[in-house]
Image (cartoon, rainbow, N blue to C red; front, side, top):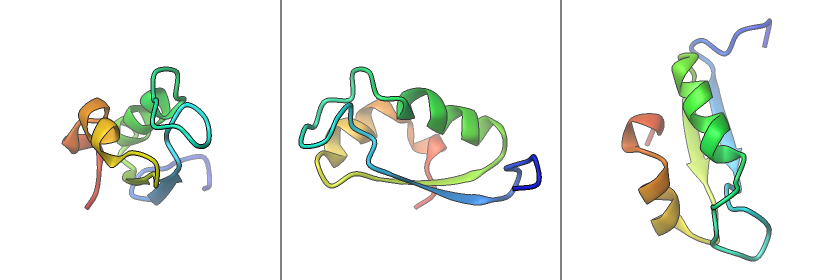
Length: 65
């Protein structure tokens, strides 16, 4: 990434705490996604386990639809 994520589109696949759960209580994504957004990356997030909890914990401003 040449040392910068500015303007890069980054996909985050699987944001729950661990596989086969919808729990995000200790998910690294809760720190990584806002940090990427603050660094002006375009972030797309998905997790097959739980969209509802992810949307509640990761503000819409953090995500590119």
